[in-house]
Amino acid sequence: MKAVRSRSGRVHVAVKVRDGAYGAAVLRAAARRWIARGEELSIALVTDREMRRLNLRWRGQDRPTDVLSFPFEEQGTLGEVIISIDTARRQAKEGVWPLAAELRRLLAHGILHCRGHDHESAADARRMAAAERRLLGRKGMVGTALSEAE
Image (cartoon, rainbow, N blue to C red; front, side):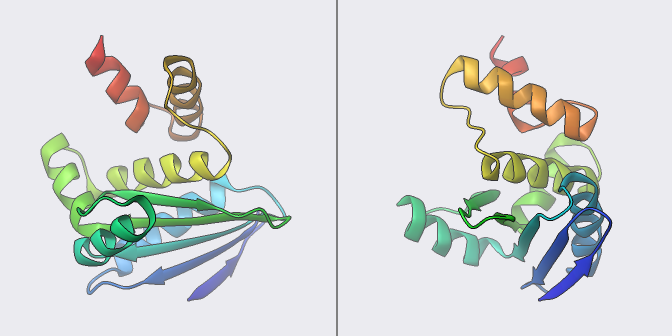
């Protein structure tokens, strides 16, 4: 895992996929902009197979998902965000947008979960969608879901 020091915080990126260098660079750059000075964030880029294993272990769901977030309670440590590159590629293709945009969308969603946001209630979803818009400059995962539900 490579740690990157920036003016904001420290970003650790673990690439556990073949041909993941581009995705790691996109995620590292976005994380540097989105985390605060003194914060630390770990990011892992994994396959659907690994994500399925993690989703089963931590959420009891025997299927891959796009992003998992694990907030840490340790001072200065934001948490860990795990992203499936396989799912990100599929979702980018389905959404007809670049892989980089999908990776940033997933990372923003994961970081917000690490910061305590949720989308279980309508009010929480609206707050999280607004936070995604502030990070991304456009709709994120929750914002898109809210638009589709209207």
